[in-house]
Image 1 (cartoon, one colour):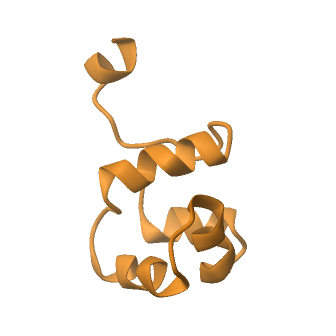
Image 2 (cartoon, rainbow, N blue to C red):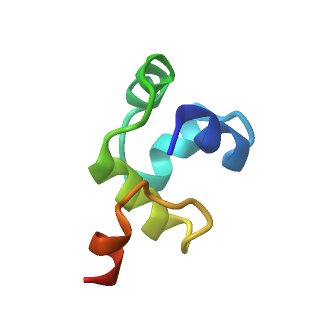
Length: 64
């Protein structure tokens, strides 16, 4: 999951993206400079969006 995936889903609102999982807007903003957001936050977004956003997890982890 990338920063752009979040912005597409949350309509370009870093504040809304942060509120969805309880992190500050500034944290979301910093993710634009890395290839993928941290895995634990990806999982939180997958849960918060009822699967609309998918965490980048290996299939073996999903099957477990």
